Structures are given as C-alpha cells and as structure tokens.
Length: 267
Image (cartoon, rainbow, N blue to C red; front, top):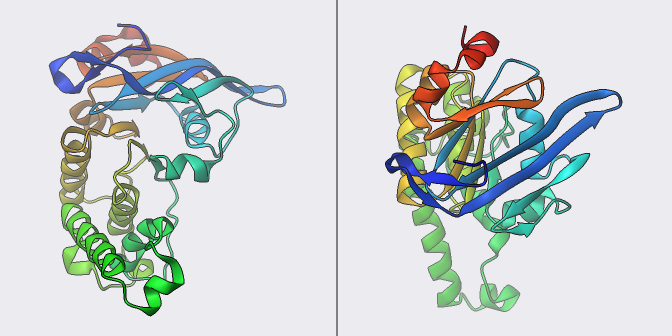
C-alpha cells in the first residue's frame, strides 16, 4: 500500500484519502525538523504517528493544522491544496486539533467550554432573530445544546458539566478538550498526546470515543502518542518517524515486527 492509499478501518478496504501531506519538510535555520514526509489518512481510519522525542511528530502536526507553514511540500484536504490556509480556516472546514498543553478557558464550565466550539456558526437571522425570538434561532440553540450534551456524555463528563473547566484534574481537562474538538463533527481529528495524564478508566473512555468518532462518524483521525500499547490498540495503520523522516509505515503488527522501528523507538 502506498502512502497515498489508506485502509478504512481494520477491514482493510481501501478508500480515498481525506487528508494528505505530500513531501513535507520543515527547517529551522540549519536544523531539519521534518524531511520529505508524506502520509495520508482516509475517512473512518485511525492513523498513528510514533517516534522518539525530536522525531518531528508535533512539527508535522503544526503543519497539518496550519499553525506552521512548511518550508516545502503541501497539505491537501479532499485533493484541494490548503498549504497556505490559516489554522482558523482549516478548523472551520473540519480539521480539528488538540494540543500537548491544555488550552482551556478556565472560568467557563465544562458545558460552556464545549458549547463554545459551536458558537462560530452563529444562530442565523442576526439581531432581528434575537429580538423577535425566532423559532429557527431557538431550534438551532436546542440542537446545539443537545449535541453538546451528547458529546459530554460520550466523553464521560456528564457529572462534571457544571464544574469550572479550570479546576479539573489534567485527565478530565484533556477529555474536555477532546469533547470540544469533536462537538462540531470534524472531518479530520488531530490528537496530540491525548492520553497523557489520564487514569486507566479515562484512557478506556478516550479509546472508545476515538473509535466512535472514526467508525461511527467517519472521521479521519491522526494520533500522536507515546503510550505504545494505546497506539497499537487504537490505530489501523502507524507511521514511525525518526530524525524527521519516515522510518516505516504499516499495521500495528507490521510495526511491532519492524527491526528498524524496534531499534529506534520500541526497544
């Protein structure tokens, strides 16, 4: 299988790529952080990125999400070049991301934090709709709140929905970020170290949520994670990076058996 083909779930059925990175390189002065990396992920697939510290995983994520422009190469969504599109444009066209460091509005409740991710769409009808209490506006607001409640439940946060997000322990805060990333039904979900700080029970919920988003909603998921057992369990394919380059691509079993990957990362 080439890097531009991907399997839809663990059944191995090939489908067109949703997100493609093509020959991406990133240089910081004389330092090459990412060198000629190509990868692709399809709807319903969970693709893992693994590698030692300094392998280029987060830098590649920055390029995919629009936080950083590549030195060379391009990024495509459904075959459309979006290399020079902003992170905001990409988010509003379905590419959502979580970060290694939590990015929370600590004064908002869990429910408000998740609901906020839907506010950019507006209520429809403008100020007049507000003044006359438009039924359409009310209907959209009910739908948003129901979607928020459903996602909060999916992420195991229902009992915490009225708690200030800034006072949550790190594991639960990460699940709030997950809920915020998926509430607007992403086409591509980029998860950067999502299991860091999670208790075993929360990790189980995270895994279930990832599978539901990928399999149920047909979202393409890219997962950067140092928890190797978690990656092996959740991912359909894995891309192993080392020193900014692709070391190997394959199924979890193929990656486990790859001597180069074992020497560089798995040990």
